[in-house]
Length: 208
Image (cartoon, rainbow, N blue to C red):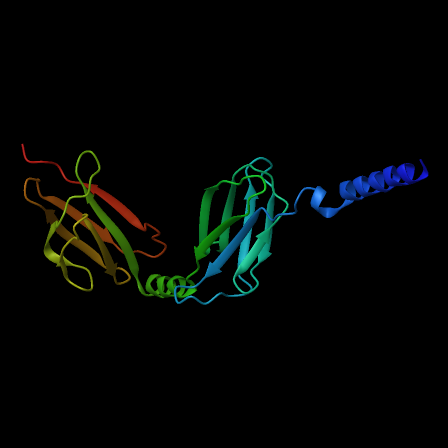
């Protein structure tokens, strides 16, 4: 009997040890890892990554360490990420979903050189993206320009009806845009100080 009683006590002790062991507890996991890299693959440290939770609107900012920033104590509602400095070419990624006991990894490209090149363009003049579309909003391919426009004297848009036009400060451009099956459209662009129009959509009307 003594041997049986002792065996039962040992079994109970092992059972309680299993309950208290780490394997019996919920596994620790990190909710979200953000991996930031430049276009050449470099993983920078010190880049600001701001996370905003959808359910609480709580915002938290971390800096990358060798390209990574971790937000481990999140729930399962969606979050928004902002990478970079406010108003300085900040990348925004919305609608990131999270799942319980699953680490979500988000890869992002951070390109500060692109920001600096754009800043230089704007300081030397204006740059605007023109998009030529039809009535339903579909791009009109290979729109012709008379006379050629911009510093590069471009004569037509791309296959999706787009063109980037650069201008000198104070410069005005007036040209006609046309495409087969569409009525010609006069376009006027002015580069003035403080002009922040980055993009303009121009609708071409079909010939009657």
